[in-house]
Every structure is written in C-alpha cells, then in structure tokens.
Length: 203
Picture 1 (cartoon, rainbow, N blue to C red):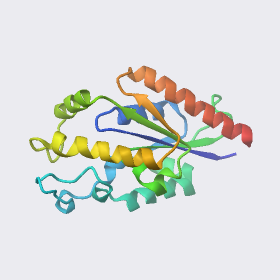
Picture 2 (cartoon, rainbow, N blue to C red; picture 1 turned 45 degrees about the vertical axis):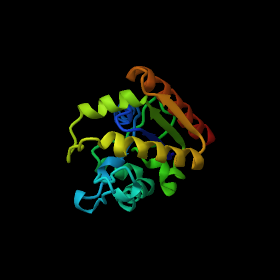
Picture 3 (cartoon, rainbow, N blue to C red; picture 1 turned 135 degrees about the horizontal axis):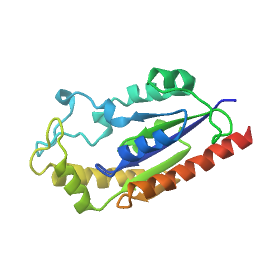
Picture 4 (cartoon, rainbow, N blue to C red; picture 1 turned 90 degrees about the vertical axis):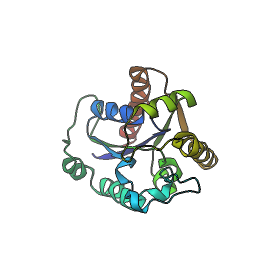
C-alpha cells in the first residue's frame, strides 16, 4: 500500500515555520520538505515600489511554476522524489502501512490557490509585531534589509497577504509561535499522526 499525505506550514517571517517543518521531517518516516524560500527570483528582476523597497513579499517574486513542478514530481512518485532529495523510503511499526508525507513550508503558500488546494492539513504560525521585528533584525539576509524595510514593506505586506489568505482559505490551524518548539512540534505531530492513521484505516 502507498498513500500520499501533503501538509502546508505557513506563517509570518521569522515565525518558526522552517524550524517546525524540519523537526516534523525528523519525526515522520518517508517525509520530505519543499520550501518556498528556495524559489525566489533573482534580485535583478524583483520590482521596486515607490519607496525604493524590493517587493519580495509577493507571489510575483517567486518562481511558483517551478515550485508546483516539484510538488507534482512528488505526487507522481513519492519514493523516487524521496530518494532524489536524499531521504530513504521505509516502513516503520508506528505507521500502519507505507505512507509518504510532503511538508510544504513558506510565507505565501496559502496565497497560491493551486498549491493550497492540494494540501490535507494547513498550519499557520503567528507571533506579535514586536517579536517579529526583533527576530528579523537579528538575521542576515542577502541582500540585506535596507533601513525601514520591515515597517515600510515586510509588515504591511504580511497584513495584506494575511487578509487575502483568511478571505480565501478555510481549515487553517493557527499556532502560537511564542510557545516552545517542543510544544508546537508535539501538537502538530499528533495531528499529522491522526491524519495518517485515518488514511491507512480507509485503505
């Protein structure tokens, strides 16, 4: 038996989505991650707004067709995709049967309808403005954030993208990004286990 189970993990910048996704992958056999951050266009083609800020926080700044191509490759042949990305297909006693799990993470995955419609579970990590700004300022980006970028572009676009997401998407589980990594992992992992159990019971 082979089943497929796809999960989306989204959230604001520096909300902890990458950390949670990697921790989930380590706990779930036959799982792999596709990260939206891997599909940014070259800086030279990202448009600039009237304030001179690069518009990275939009779908137009991403190669979404290429990302969807990778998702489709996983859907066509999960074991082959897993081997290609360095994983190992295996069956363990904890999972009844052979289930392959795709974890998709990124800040705008729920704003791209073709991707969102493929997901079985949806999680969104959120943190307050001040914590988000503090975490963002402590990271080094290439290219680096110019002065005023967070308040002039990043946060306003987060609010705009979130409104669009909430108007278009149902079934999102909102997670408190201030909780410990262990607590967040335990909650999502248990949810995913139940989803996989339902899949295998159905078969």
